[in-house]
Amino acid sequence: MLVDDVERTLTPPRGYDLDATLRFAGLGSLDPTWQRRPGAILKAGRTPDGPVTLLLARERDGVRARAFGPGAHWAIERADALAGLRDDPAAFAPREPPRLRAIARRHRGVHLPRSPWVFEVLTGVILQQRITFRDAARARRILVHRLGAAAPGPGALLLPLAPPDWLRLTSEDFRRAGIDGQRARALRAAARHARRIDAAFDLNPARACEILAAVPGCGPWTVEMTMGLALGDPDAVPIGDLHLPSIVAWALAGELRGDDRRMVELLEPFRGQRFRLLRLLLDDLIDDVDVHREEEIVQQRDRVPAGALGPVHDGEIKQLHAELDEMRVELAAVQERLDFAERLLTREREQAQLWPGADA
Image (cartoon, rainbow, N blue to C red):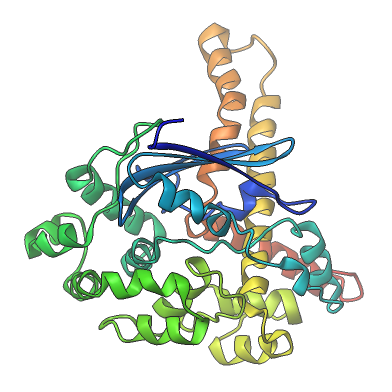
């Protein structure tokens, strides 16, 4: 086997769900630094030894990890962490409320990944400050397509920006990508501390949190979101999120709206596993929206008799079926579909108000 092509088999526990575990491994489905297909992902990254592309693929006997490029050995040693296999989801087994117990049971195969690329995840979180996920993902794509070098191995991926790339960008470069001055300053500050930030991978949560909080422009939401998404901290609580308080209020108390204070109050009985709870709620929303979107496409197809619109239109309708798998991948970016999810929640709330005795 070549030095730049290293392989390893990981042994996950029974019920492990690779697709759900790694649904947030990239910044949106069009992120040029990764590719996702059912049962497998490719992720490009930078290591102290050089660039790498890491493949994680679910197979009958486990998860196959294969790394390509000068950083192959470095990445393969940390592949189990990225796959979430250093995490123990069994630590979270809620009994109440029944809704949460059902959600935890449905998503028991979801693990919290621990990414060796903490700096990269942090830049993605900074890009999301005060704007939509879609705009943040677009900004990232613009910059990576401009400055990202080709990654080794399969997939024709691009490497994420290195710290010197972020520092080389001018104010005009940031403006053209839709990044305001405040986020640009935070990104430059993170780039100047990149080595310390990536070193947080090997530290305990308290020390890692201190390092992230010391970066100018990284407030509680940015720090806690990075702790959860990058470092797999099961108890991170992102304060200041636009949607999470209401999602938690509805799931745990059946309340129409919530704020940060109420969210923290409702999460308190689950201290130690609060981010895991948040992650499972988001996974459940994504899957619920995915099902409803698929139902809408099928209903659209079924409203038209076969052949009624001619071969061109029939071909377009058939194409809808072929696009379902691609749509599932695209739906991994939760904030891109929160408006749709909110409509579903509103309808359920209205039904609960009409039938107060029913089990929501």
